[in-house]
Image (spheres, rainbow, N blue to C red):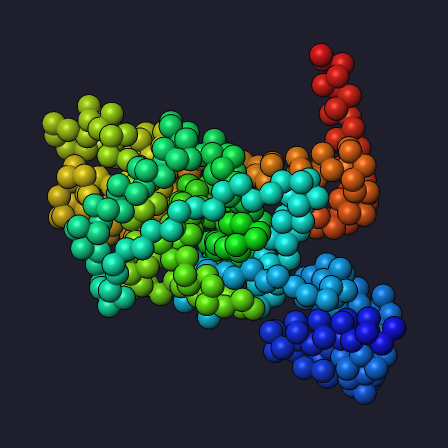
Length: 383
Protein backbone atom coordinates (compact mmCIF):
# COMPACT_ATOMS: atom_id res chain seq x y z
CA UNK A 1 0.00 0.00 0.00
CA UNK A 2 2.88 2.33 0.80
CA UNK A 3 4.09 2.65 -2.77
CA UNK A 4 0.53 3.16 -4.09
CA UNK A 5 -0.12 5.85 -1.47
CA UNK A 6 3.14 7.56 -2.42
CA UNK A 7 2.17 7.62 -6.11
CA UNK A 8 -1.18 9.26 -5.30
CA UNK A 9 0.44 11.69 -2.87
CA UNK A 10 3.13 12.66 -5.37
CA UNK A 11 0.54 13.30 -8.09
CA UNK A 12 -1.60 15.41 -5.76
CA UNK A 13 1.43 17.45 -4.76
CA UNK A 14 2.33 17.89 -8.42
CA UNK A 15 -0.98 19.53 -9.36
CA UNK A 16 -0.88 21.58 -6.14
CA UNK A 17 2.55 22.97 -7.00
CA UNK A 18 1.51 23.76 -10.56
CA UNK A 19 -1.60 25.63 -9.45
CA UNK A 20 -0.22 27.27 -6.32
CA UNK A 21 -2.74 25.58 -4.01
CA UNK A 22 -1.58 25.21 -0.40
CA UNK A 23 -1.93 22.23 1.93
CA UNK A 24 -4.32 24.24 4.06
CA UNK A 25 -6.55 25.11 1.10
CA UNK A 26 -6.71 21.49 -0.04
CA UNK A 27 -7.31 20.14 3.47
CA UNK A 28 -10.26 22.53 3.81
CA UNK A 29 -11.56 21.41 0.42
CA UNK A 30 -11.81 17.75 1.50
CA UNK A 31 -12.56 18.56 5.16
CA UNK A 32 -9.51 17.04 6.86
CA UNK A 33 -6.85 18.49 9.10
CA UNK A 34 -3.63 19.92 7.72
CA UNK A 35 -1.71 17.08 9.37
CA UNK A 36 -3.88 14.43 7.67
CA UNK A 37 -3.45 16.15 4.33
CA UNK A 38 0.33 16.13 4.83
CA UNK A 39 0.22 12.36 5.44
CA UNK A 40 -1.68 11.87 2.18
CA UNK A 41 0.94 13.91 0.31
CA UNK A 42 3.87 12.06 1.90
CA UNK A 43 2.32 8.65 1.24
CA UNK A 44 2.10 7.81 4.94
CA UNK A 45 -1.70 7.37 4.61
CA UNK A 46 -3.78 6.51 1.55
CA UNK A 47 -6.61 8.87 0.70
CA UNK A 48 -10.08 7.35 0.26
CA UNK A 49 -11.78 7.41 -3.15
CA UNK A 50 -14.44 9.99 -2.21
CA UNK A 51 -11.86 12.58 -1.16
CA UNK A 52 -9.70 11.81 -4.19
CA UNK A 53 -12.76 12.32 -6.41
CA UNK A 54 -13.27 15.80 -4.90
CA UNK A 55 -9.61 16.66 -5.58
CA UNK A 56 -9.85 15.30 -9.14
CA UNK A 57 -12.94 17.43 -9.78
CA UNK A 58 -11.24 20.51 -8.31
CA UNK A 59 -8.19 20.18 -10.60
CA UNK A 60 -10.31 18.95 -13.52
CA UNK A 61 -8.37 15.70 -13.76
CA UNK A 62 -9.64 12.13 -14.26
CA UNK A 63 -9.28 9.92 -11.20
CA UNK A 64 -6.85 7.73 -13.14
CA UNK A 65 -4.41 10.65 -13.36
CA UNK A 66 -3.55 10.31 -9.66
CA UNK A 67 -2.99 6.55 -9.92
CA UNK A 68 -0.33 6.67 -12.64
CA UNK A 69 3.35 6.21 -11.90
CA UNK A 70 4.45 8.45 -14.78
CA UNK A 71 2.83 11.17 -16.85
CA UNK A 72 3.66 12.21 -20.37
CA UNK A 73 2.85 15.89 -20.30
CA UNK A 74 1.82 17.87 -23.34
CA UNK A 75 3.54 21.18 -23.97
CA UNK A 76 1.21 24.02 -24.87
CA UNK A 77 1.38 27.24 -26.84
CA UNK A 78 -1.32 29.88 -26.64
CA UNK A 79 -2.86 32.38 -28.99
CA UNK A 80 -4.12 34.81 -26.38
CA UNK A 81 -3.43 38.51 -25.92
CA UNK A 82 -1.88 39.18 -22.50
CA UNK A 83 -2.30 35.54 -21.34
CA UNK A 84 -1.14 36.13 -17.77
CA UNK A 85 -4.13 38.45 -17.36
CA UNK A 86 -6.72 36.72 -19.54
CA UNK A 87 -6.00 33.08 -18.68
CA UNK A 88 -6.45 31.33 -15.34
CA UNK A 89 -5.04 28.08 -14.02
CA UNK A 90 -8.25 26.09 -13.83
CA UNK A 91 -8.68 26.62 -17.57
CA UNK A 92 -5.28 25.02 -18.08
CA UNK A 93 -6.31 21.88 -16.24
CA UNK A 94 -9.63 21.69 -18.06
CA UNK A 95 -7.96 21.90 -21.48
CA UNK A 96 -5.12 19.54 -20.61
CA UNK A 97 -7.57 16.98 -19.21
CA UNK A 98 -9.68 17.28 -22.35
CA UNK A 99 -6.68 16.65 -24.58
CA UNK A 100 -5.65 13.63 -22.52
CA UNK A 101 -9.15 12.16 -22.86
CA UNK A 102 -9.14 12.67 -26.61
CA UNK A 103 -5.72 11.03 -26.86
CA UNK A 104 -6.92 8.10 -24.73
CA UNK A 105 -9.99 7.56 -26.93
CA UNK A 106 -7.93 7.45 -30.12
CA UNK A 107 -5.43 5.13 -28.42
CA UNK A 108 -8.21 2.74 -27.32
CA UNK A 109 -9.47 2.79 -30.91
CA UNK A 110 -6.04 1.69 -32.10
CA UNK A 111 -5.43 4.87 -34.08
CA UNK A 112 -1.74 5.70 -34.04
CA UNK A 113 -0.16 9.03 -34.93
CA UNK A 114 -0.42 9.27 -38.69
CA UNK A 115 0.88 12.77 -39.27
CA UNK A 116 3.42 15.11 -37.76
CA UNK A 117 3.52 18.40 -39.73
CA UNK A 118 6.74 19.44 -41.40
CA UNK A 119 8.81 21.92 -39.46
CA UNK A 120 9.78 25.12 -41.29
CA UNK A 121 12.73 27.10 -39.99
CA UNK A 122 12.35 30.73 -41.04
CA UNK A 123 15.29 33.05 -40.41
CA UNK A 124 13.43 35.31 -37.98
CA UNK A 125 14.67 38.22 -35.93
CA UNK A 126 12.51 38.40 -32.76
CA UNK A 127 12.95 42.18 -32.75
CA UNK A 128 11.20 42.61 -36.09
CA UNK A 129 8.04 44.68 -35.86
CA UNK A 130 6.81 43.66 -39.31
CA UNK A 131 7.40 40.67 -41.60
CA UNK A 132 9.94 41.45 -44.38
CA UNK A 133 8.61 41.03 -47.91
CA UNK A 134 10.87 38.08 -48.80
CA UNK A 135 9.78 36.18 -45.66
CA UNK A 136 6.14 37.04 -46.35
CA UNK A 137 6.44 35.55 -49.83
CA UNK A 138 7.85 32.35 -48.36
CA UNK A 139 4.95 32.17 -45.89
CA UNK A 140 2.47 32.46 -48.77
CA UNK A 141 4.23 29.63 -50.64
CA UNK A 142 4.14 27.43 -47.54
CA UNK A 143 0.44 28.17 -47.01
CA UNK A 144 -0.39 27.05 -50.55
CA UNK A 145 1.82 23.98 -50.13
CA UNK A 146 -0.02 23.05 -46.93
CA UNK A 147 -3.41 23.49 -48.60
CA UNK A 148 -2.39 20.88 -51.15
CA UNK A 149 -0.95 18.59 -48.49
CA UNK A 150 -4.18 18.73 -46.48
CA UNK A 151 -6.23 18.30 -49.67
CA UNK A 152 -8.26 21.43 -48.89
CA UNK A 153 -9.47 22.18 -52.41
CA UNK A 154 -12.64 24.27 -52.14
CA UNK A 155 -13.39 23.18 -48.54
CA UNK A 156 -14.52 25.87 -46.10
CA UNK A 157 -16.05 25.87 -42.63
CA UNK A 158 -16.80 22.42 -41.21
CA UNK A 159 -15.45 20.74 -44.36
CA UNK A 160 -12.12 22.51 -43.78
CA UNK A 161 -12.00 21.23 -40.21
CA UNK A 162 -12.51 17.69 -41.49
CA UNK A 163 -9.50 18.12 -43.81
CA UNK A 164 -7.28 18.73 -40.77
CA UNK A 165 -8.81 15.81 -38.86
CA UNK A 166 -8.47 13.46 -41.83
CA UNK A 167 -4.74 14.19 -41.85
CA UNK A 168 -4.38 13.39 -38.15
CA UNK A 169 -4.53 16.83 -36.46
CA UNK A 170 -6.76 16.47 -33.39
CA UNK A 171 -9.04 19.52 -33.22
CA UNK A 172 -11.01 19.94 -30.01
CA UNK A 173 -13.75 22.45 -29.27
CA UNK A 174 -15.07 23.34 -25.82
CA UNK A 175 -16.66 26.43 -24.29
CA UNK A 176 -14.45 28.30 -21.82
CA UNK A 177 -16.66 31.34 -21.07
CA UNK A 178 -13.59 33.47 -21.73
CA UNK A 179 -13.68 35.53 -24.92
CA UNK A 180 -10.02 36.51 -24.46
CA UNK A 181 -8.88 32.90 -24.90
CA UNK A 182 -9.24 31.91 -28.55
CA UNK A 183 -7.28 28.69 -28.67
CA UNK A 184 -4.01 26.86 -28.21
CA UNK A 185 -1.94 24.16 -29.82
CA UNK A 186 -0.01 21.25 -28.36
CA UNK A 187 2.72 19.04 -29.73
CA UNK A 188 4.00 15.74 -28.41
CA UNK A 189 6.29 13.42 -30.36
CA UNK A 190 4.37 10.35 -29.18
CA UNK A 191 0.85 11.78 -28.90
CA UNK A 192 0.80 13.94 -32.00
CA UNK A 193 -0.62 17.41 -32.61
CA UNK A 194 -3.63 18.97 -30.95
CA UNK A 195 -5.46 22.22 -31.54
CA UNK A 196 -7.94 23.49 -28.95
CA UNK A 197 -10.51 26.14 -29.88
CA UNK A 198 -12.74 28.05 -27.49
CA UNK A 199 -16.29 27.28 -28.67
CA UNK A 200 -17.82 30.20 -26.76
CA UNK A 201 -21.04 31.33 -28.47
CA UNK A 202 -19.83 34.94 -28.36
CA UNK A 203 -16.82 34.15 -30.56
CA UNK A 204 -17.85 34.10 -34.25
CA UNK A 205 -17.45 30.81 -36.10
CA UNK A 206 -15.25 32.56 -38.65
CA UNK A 207 -12.79 33.52 -35.90
CA UNK A 208 -12.72 29.95 -34.60
CA UNK A 209 -11.72 28.65 -38.01
CA UNK A 210 -9.02 31.33 -38.23
CA UNK A 211 -7.74 30.16 -34.82
CA UNK A 212 -7.37 26.59 -36.11
CA UNK A 213 -5.16 27.69 -38.99
CA UNK A 214 -3.28 30.21 -36.81
CA UNK A 215 -2.41 27.48 -34.30
CA UNK A 216 -1.48 25.10 -37.11
CA UNK A 217 1.02 27.77 -38.19
CA UNK A 218 2.64 27.60 -34.74
CA UNK A 219 3.00 23.84 -35.19
CA UNK A 220 4.79 24.48 -38.48
CA UNK A 221 7.02 27.43 -37.58
CA UNK A 222 7.55 27.31 -33.80
CA UNK A 223 8.00 23.60 -33.09
CA UNK A 224 11.15 23.98 -31.01
CA UNK A 225 9.36 26.23 -28.54
CA UNK A 226 6.91 23.45 -27.68
CA UNK A 227 9.76 21.40 -26.30
CA UNK A 228 11.00 24.08 -23.94
CA UNK A 229 8.47 23.27 -21.23
CA UNK A 230 7.06 19.84 -20.39
CA UNK A 231 5.09 20.70 -17.31
CA UNK A 232 3.55 24.06 -18.03
CA UNK A 233 2.34 26.31 -20.81
CA UNK A 234 4.44 28.28 -23.23
CA UNK A 235 2.83 31.68 -23.59
CA UNK A 236 2.89 33.47 -26.92
CA UNK A 237 0.40 36.18 -27.71
CA UNK A 238 1.97 39.54 -27.08
CA UNK A 239 0.48 42.06 -29.41
CA UNK A 240 3.78 42.92 -31.11
CA UNK A 241 5.14 39.35 -31.25
CA UNK A 242 6.56 38.59 -34.69
CA UNK A 243 5.62 34.91 -34.14
CA UNK A 244 1.97 35.91 -33.88
CA UNK A 245 2.18 38.06 -36.99
CA UNK A 246 3.71 35.18 -38.95
CA UNK A 247 0.92 32.87 -37.77
CA UNK A 248 -1.67 35.48 -38.76
CA UNK A 249 -0.07 35.91 -42.19
CA UNK A 250 -0.05 32.15 -42.77
CA UNK A 251 -3.71 31.86 -41.73
CA UNK A 252 -4.65 34.67 -44.12
CA UNK A 253 -2.88 33.10 -47.09
CA UNK A 254 -4.23 29.65 -46.22
CA UNK A 255 -7.86 30.70 -45.84
CA UNK A 256 -7.90 33.34 -48.59
CA UNK A 257 -5.50 32.31 -51.37
CA UNK A 258 -4.65 34.81 -54.06
CA UNK A 259 -6.22 32.71 -56.85
CA UNK A 260 -9.44 32.34 -54.86
CA UNK A 261 -9.73 36.11 -54.54
CA UNK A 262 -9.14 36.45 -58.31
CA UNK A 263 -12.32 34.47 -58.90
CA UNK A 264 -14.18 37.45 -57.46
CA UNK A 265 -12.49 40.01 -59.72
CA UNK A 266 -15.85 40.91 -61.22
CA UNK A 267 -16.88 42.26 -57.81
CA UNK A 268 -13.54 43.76 -56.78
CA UNK A 269 -12.22 45.43 -59.93
CA UNK A 270 -13.40 48.37 -62.00
CA UNK A 271 -14.58 50.79 -59.36
CA UNK A 272 -15.52 51.21 -55.72
CA UNK A 273 -15.83 47.94 -53.82
CA UNK A 274 -19.33 47.59 -52.35
CA UNK A 275 -19.83 46.59 -48.72
CA UNK A 276 -22.50 44.03 -49.69
CA UNK A 277 -20.01 42.35 -52.04
CA UNK A 278 -17.45 42.07 -49.24
CA UNK A 279 -20.06 40.40 -47.03
CA UNK A 280 -20.94 38.04 -49.87
CA UNK A 281 -17.31 36.99 -50.38
CA UNK A 282 -16.48 36.61 -46.70
CA UNK A 283 -19.53 34.40 -46.13
CA UNK A 284 -18.69 32.28 -49.17
CA UNK A 285 -15.16 31.72 -47.85
CA UNK A 286 -16.28 31.48 -44.18
CA UNK A 287 -13.67 34.01 -43.09
CA UNK A 288 -13.86 37.16 -41.00
CA UNK A 289 -14.37 40.51 -42.69
CA UNK A 290 -11.16 41.72 -41.07
CA UNK A 291 -9.17 38.86 -42.62
CA UNK A 292 -10.70 39.54 -46.01
CA UNK A 293 -9.78 43.22 -45.89
CA UNK A 294 -6.20 42.32 -44.95
CA UNK A 295 -6.07 39.94 -47.93
CA UNK A 296 -7.43 42.61 -50.31
CA UNK A 297 -4.70 44.98 -49.19
CA UNK A 298 -1.95 42.36 -49.64
CA UNK A 299 -3.21 41.40 -53.09
CA UNK A 300 -3.43 45.01 -54.25
CA UNK A 301 -7.21 45.37 -54.44
CA UNK A 302 -7.34 48.28 -52.00
CA UNK A 303 -4.92 51.07 -51.14
CA UNK A 304 -3.27 51.73 -47.78
CA UNK A 305 -5.67 54.62 -47.16
CA UNK A 306 -8.74 52.49 -47.87
CA UNK A 307 -7.32 49.74 -45.65
CA UNK A 308 -6.79 52.12 -42.72
CA UNK A 309 -10.24 53.63 -43.11
CA UNK A 310 -11.72 50.13 -43.22
CA UNK A 311 -9.93 49.19 -40.00
CA UNK A 312 -11.21 52.36 -38.34
CA UNK A 313 -14.73 51.43 -39.41
CA UNK A 314 -14.40 47.92 -37.99
CA UNK A 315 -13.11 49.28 -34.68
CA UNK A 316 -15.85 51.91 -34.49
CA UNK A 317 -18.63 49.41 -35.17
CA UNK A 318 -17.28 46.68 -32.88
CA UNK A 319 -16.48 44.40 -35.82
CA UNK A 320 -12.82 44.16 -34.89
CA UNK A 321 -13.91 41.39 -32.49
CA UNK A 322 -17.42 40.53 -33.63
CA UNK A 323 -18.61 39.73 -37.14
CA UNK A 324 -21.20 41.38 -39.40
CA UNK A 325 -23.76 38.83 -40.54
CA UNK A 326 -21.85 35.89 -39.02
CA UNK A 327 -22.43 32.32 -40.14
CA UNK A 328 -24.62 30.25 -37.83
CA UNK A 329 -23.12 28.23 -35.00
CA UNK A 330 -22.55 24.59 -35.95
CA UNK A 331 -21.96 21.48 -33.84
CA UNK A 332 -18.40 20.20 -33.58
CA UNK A 333 -16.28 17.36 -32.14
CA UNK A 334 -18.12 14.93 -34.41
CA UNK A 335 -15.08 12.74 -35.03
CA UNK A 336 -14.21 12.41 -31.33
CA UNK A 337 -17.76 11.46 -30.34
CA UNK A 338 -17.84 9.01 -33.25
CA UNK A 339 -14.71 7.33 -31.86
CA UNK A 340 -16.24 7.07 -28.36
CA UNK A 341 -19.47 5.74 -29.82
CA UNK A 342 -17.61 3.09 -31.80
CA UNK A 343 -15.64 2.03 -28.71
CA UNK A 344 -18.87 1.52 -26.78
CA UNK A 345 -20.57 -0.37 -29.60
CA UNK A 346 -17.58 -2.72 -29.81
CA UNK A 347 -17.75 -3.29 -26.01
CA UNK A 348 -14.27 -1.80 -25.56
CA UNK A 349 -15.63 0.65 -22.97
CA UNK A 350 -18.69 0.85 -20.74
CA UNK A 351 -21.08 3.60 -19.71
CA UNK A 352 -18.77 5.00 -17.02
CA UNK A 353 -15.89 5.32 -19.48
CA UNK A 354 -18.17 7.02 -22.02
CA UNK A 355 -19.04 9.56 -19.33
CA UNK A 356 -15.36 10.06 -18.44
CA UNK A 357 -14.18 10.49 -22.03
CA UNK A 358 -17.00 12.90 -22.95
CA UNK A 359 -16.73 14.67 -19.57
CA UNK A 360 -20.42 14.26 -18.79
CA UNK A 361 -22.36 12.68 -15.94
CA UNK A 362 -23.18 8.98 -16.09
CA UNK A 363 -26.90 9.76 -16.42
CA UNK A 364 -26.15 11.97 -19.43
CA UNK A 365 -23.97 9.24 -20.90
CA UNK A 366 -26.86 6.76 -20.63
CA UNK A 367 -29.15 9.21 -22.45
CA UNK A 368 -26.55 9.70 -25.17
CA UNK A 369 -26.13 5.93 -25.57
CA UNK A 370 -29.91 5.56 -25.90
CA UNK A 371 -29.81 8.15 -28.69
CA UNK A 372 -26.99 6.21 -30.39
CA UNK A 373 -29.01 2.99 -30.24
CA UNK A 374 -32.15 4.76 -31.47
CA UNK A 375 -30.32 6.41 -34.36
CA UNK A 376 -28.64 3.13 -35.30
CA UNK A 377 -32.06 1.45 -35.37
CA UNK A 378 -33.47 4.16 -37.60
CA UNK A 379 -30.54 3.80 -40.01
CA UNK A 380 -30.97 0.01 -40.18
CA UNK A 381 -34.71 0.44 -40.80
CA UNK A 382 -34.02 2.92 -43.59
CA UNK A 383 -31.53 0.57 -45.23
